[in-house]
Length: 447
Ligand SMILES: *[C@@H]1O[C@H](CO)[C@@H](O)[C@H](O)[C@H]1NC(C)=O
Ligand SMILES: *[C@@H]1O[C@H](CO)[C@@H](O)[C@H](O)[C@H]1NC(C)=O
Image 1 (cartoon, protein in one colour):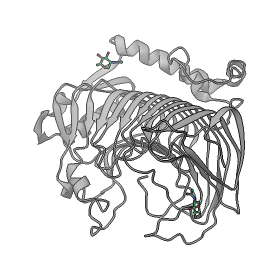
Image 2 (tube, helix red, strand yellow):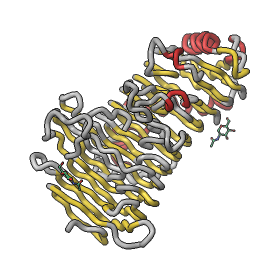
Image 3 (cartoon, protein in one colour):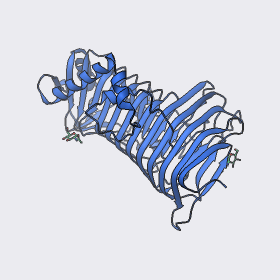
Image 4 (cartoon, protein in one colour):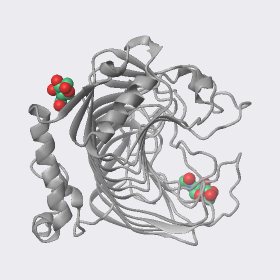
């Protein structure tokens, strides 16, 4: 996890919860007719859709219709960063040109396509802010590149490209956003313990965005976190590739905090840290058709690190392949705080040589940063792991280590088969303070 310092503890590589099939999912509406839904909504959602999509859903649909129409017709205003002075030669600083182009795109009204053609554009830290009068589609065909000079981040070491308070934004185009993170990785406290740890830089941040679509893009070599989605709502990430070397520190693929209603579909993530890290305030997240590895898998937590009530709920990962995590799963420690992680489903996951394929750890404390409190008030309940198959790089394939004070409840293992990589023997399970049930064939089981 990127926020290592002393946080919570709930890390799951792959989990599944039970969820919220009865709950309203505004995204279903949002993407009606437009997204092949691999996510099983339990068959209940159709009737709910009809009942539950009142006005704002209709608006969302309108918006899609409009975007579809505009991207192929001439009714959208078309802007091109080159017309605002961008050189795209990979050497010239194009930051000012992008700012000017964004200002125009944001203020012109109606549907706007902001084109970033097939060149290499060098950008310093930049914020594309809203609110905007227009519905902007940023079409990145070429490459947006970060400078490797860390001194350029003196004002704000945490952000490179940020979209802030923008509604109805689409970022697409088949191009690449490249954080060129090499100098950051070399100067990481993870690589060199003598260096001071800083809060992670986020290559691409979506902050307070609403009705956001990120699709058909490659984001790579993030300074640290590759994509950060924070305090946003109604988000779809689809057809995105996120890549960084397996040994690059803190390079989470997609990091989600305080965001509601998000779908991550058809995504390939191979980085040095979590593929997807889910932090407090995340509600109603559906992940499907995910390929993850190398990397540390999917994590939920840190919760409780601010000592306040924090929760994560309604997480479904249905359809994922995880392979070759090179390191043991990172577990974080939990501190005071209260809240819960609930209604989580991990379904149809293939594991190939994954260390700690299924893990819940409420007890772990990082030795270097001892937890202030041993017991957390964080509840973990209603987690389903269904149809999880493959090989574990660690002897223990299933580790459910909950706290005595707040046992984990409603944990279900259904059709789980995890063998040890290499010898094909059954892996082991280690369980503590967990209310667990089994369905179908489950191996390993708790002793
Ligand atoms: C991605 O964008 C490129 C450029 O617009 C386009 O040619 C390609 O078809 C798109 N791919 C997908 C899967 O949408
Ligand atoms: C579970 O947590 C306890 C308390 O921190 C620890 O002593 C134990 O080693 C953990 N068990 C596993 C299997 O990780």
